[in-house]
Length: 413
Image 1 (tube, helix red, strand yellow):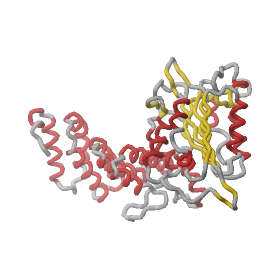
Image 2 (cartoon, one colour; image 1 turned 120 degrees about the vertical axis):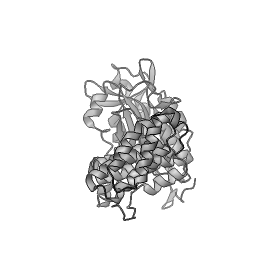
Image 3 (cartoon, helix red, strand yellow; image 1 turned 180 degrees about the horizontal axis):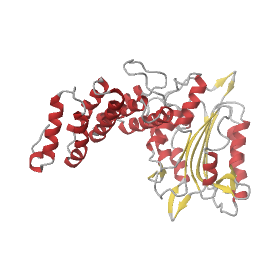
């Protein structure tokens, strides 16, 4: 993985810094929700230059098992004072001072009664980052909020203080205290952190931090209600504000597709990236990125909008490329029904969606799955009298054969 020539500016060597902090583990009913020491150990295997995204000389410090918040503060100040880029990773249990209702990162040995004395105040982290005067900084968090902190997380709707800090990019997830043990964790490493590591390890060119976050959050199998920072909506708003053109977003922030038939790809439109991932066989990543993109489009335009249906059609094609013909058929049927309602039976896009659904359905080899989806497909085809009548006959014949087990065994569409 190559980087540009960086490291010396105005005759002064720039030196980067990576600080990896493992706070206290989050445990629920004997099951581990997050094992910060394992996360930090895995992330420490990634070269500092890859984490920083450049080739400057860099130091890496791992803090695990620390009990004194002042020790963490000292290390944080050294890191923030680095002349080059900064990468800070924090994993563990997010808790709160019940008296002052302030968030803290629990350290080893922190209890409900000792939060004010044995944990790292969240404001200390934000304050040190706010004081940084040179170099870009990236903050990544993988946290679980306990019962004292979770209401505050919901009240803030984000991690307070990080948004808007000059030169600071902040990404991460905060799961709630009711998350089932083991959910979002693979082999001891949290799935969000694992996805960051995997993406950095396999990409020939380092993805942007935004892209890493989108792919990691989309692929991590996060529990419902997990706080994702920034969300797809926040990425879209940030991108639109930065460019001054709300319809042109920075990749891979969610952006509406161009109008049908234009053949153009606007800045931030991830379809070329999606296609490249699918062709490369990285279907899970392609699906994750497509889902995040669709989420942003739905938030902006609504689920029944043309833009959202275009996203469904893109996901249908990705599912076809992945060999998931059941999902592809259902997605094409959903797109066809929506377009039929707006555009009528004579629209080419409606016929294309129906034809795509039929093709994918005929590729489904599992009898039960094909039988379940068949009636919906036949109903769609019957609503399109201008479609090739052979399509309807094929679907009806196959559905009839599927309903007769002896015939379905010999059916080869």
